[in-house]
Amino acid sequence: MEDESNENFQGNISVCPWPDDKRWAYSITFDEALSDLHRFAVPILEKHGVPGHLEVVVGQMGRVRQIGESSYNGFKHMNTAELRAMLARGWGVGNHSWSHATVNAETADVELKKAKQTLEEATGAPVTIYCAPGNNSNMNDEALAACRQFGYLGAMSLTDALNRPGDGDLLWLNRTFLHDQGYAPFFSEFDPFRNLAHARREHGWVIDYCHCPLEKPIHRNKDCSAAQLRERLETVLAGGSGEVWLARVEDAVDYRYTRRAVKIKAHERDGYDLSAPDLHPAVRRRTLTLTAPRDFKAAEVDGHPCPMRPHGDRMLLDMDLSSPHRLRLVRRKKSS
Ligand SMILES: [Zn+2]
Image 1: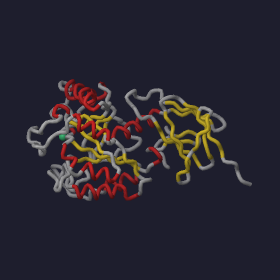
Image 2: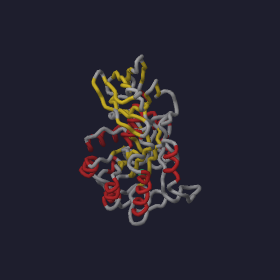
Image 3: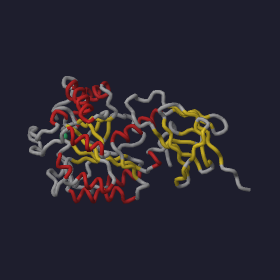
Image 4: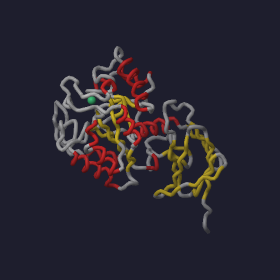
């Protein structure tokens, strides 16, 4: 495993870029959270074991869409019961604003604060992800400042770029559409799978972007067809289940925050103190995967024996950083 910085490396242990030392991460998002996802997207994702992510227009839950010139007008937004059922199936959820209009300092109380609270009540789950409606103009400084203020951990843009384990801005997330045609002014055609190869090469995290895949895409730069979705997931999984972390957006964001916050202090005799004292309180999943060379066979955590698992030429150990821990690595006996 290579590491892009020394922050997560101390002595013989380092923190894996992604859980279980997966090489890269993949998430897929569905803007507007439409009921028609049940026709193709939900069964295709479940067949491949991929969790989806719903971007909810909170003021529209349960309503037939009628927003400006939207390509998806006439489709029904999922209601509270449908959203709860999707979360129970392992999907994640984000706030796609209250009204799908402008998000700035003036509107943030409704679009970000009220929408977050209402969606949390509707789903019974914390909401830490904002998904900008429309385009990146709703990722403006005022919107992102309000996201910080209201306790969001991630804000999703439409940017054709990878997310990397060492990214500086933890709130800004890139979403890259894997469709075969790009947006104005280029309308470029390209290989939708280039970003997957890129992610494999650079420990990246691809956040894929769809609305509601059907027999044919409603809009070529907002969606793929059901057949293309199938092909895409087969490509994602082509490296085998050991290679890619199929992550809900909030789980990958939590890992990023925890990895950034962990402090590792090395002692003599293969001992380490690990803690994450400054970790954002909204982070729920605080478990990191640590890796050590094969010279070690096991670990002790707070004095208790703790097996490590082999992974290639390394050993792995998961550790929950909700509280500080003392770790000691146990060396293999050298055979003479
Ligand atoms: Zn939208």
